[in-house]
Image (cartoon, rainbow, N blue to C red; front, top):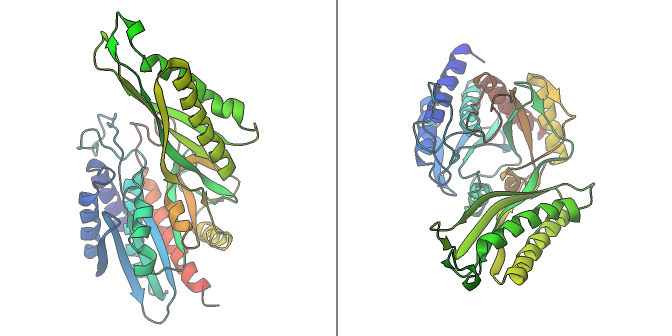
Length: 385
């Protein structure tokens, strides 16, 4: 990549990091994307796809082949911890703790590379997706007619990966990321004076037992050779220190690699709710929210992505899946495609995903943009038959 373009991408990425847009509130980021696409010379740009989604189209006549490339745009509701970072988030309580600022910028870089390259013909769709962090952005774009309005034969995406050598690309043989759902266990008790517990039904005591019981769903219900995760991440309840509360909500996330394990975890959560209801005389309900499917590559697209990766950088094919989720899987359920990891470098010192000290490694931008551009070229050529 030309050093001037690399410097420009670094500047853009740091701007996005300093000005993050929360899930479902990506309007400013989408506007930035549109502005930079126009600066690059892209003229065919559609906005408002599935929310704040942007789809830009690059086209060269002479072929009806098409390929999609995707980046996610949203940030997380996390307060950034790095006080001395010059491009620290200026939006209190919001930060790019997952590297979507880098993903978005790399796709802009891909546009720049492809616009200067006259070796390809066909259509490239640049998909800037909103609301990946639990906001259902991919599914919303699908419902909004993404693949009907902007046809593409295949779609490819990537995620930066701390702990993998910077710039190395991992292409998985099996699952890439897990399926998952968010859930709540809502416990309704009977409020009263803290000194008169016999006149109440205490949802906090019930919640404590529910928390312990949830830990046994994986440990004592799943086959030890199966893979599942139940993480309780939030608890809400109580209004005064001298009152026994009326209501407690326990919130969390479940992850799994097979439908059978997902069903076992859901059944376990329902049993926990029923059990604390009967034991403590409260009303408890497990509410399972929407989720994402397993991210699993299509074999032909997986091999194409591996060939493109090997052409631009170091390729790894020996890495197992992660229990993190990725709603790119909704796209893969619609059209063939593949999703890869690109190393972000060491994860020590809080550089892991969703950590308040995380920052995307700008040195990865040329590799990511180059990989996406090479993938697009190969996808368009491969269809020539």
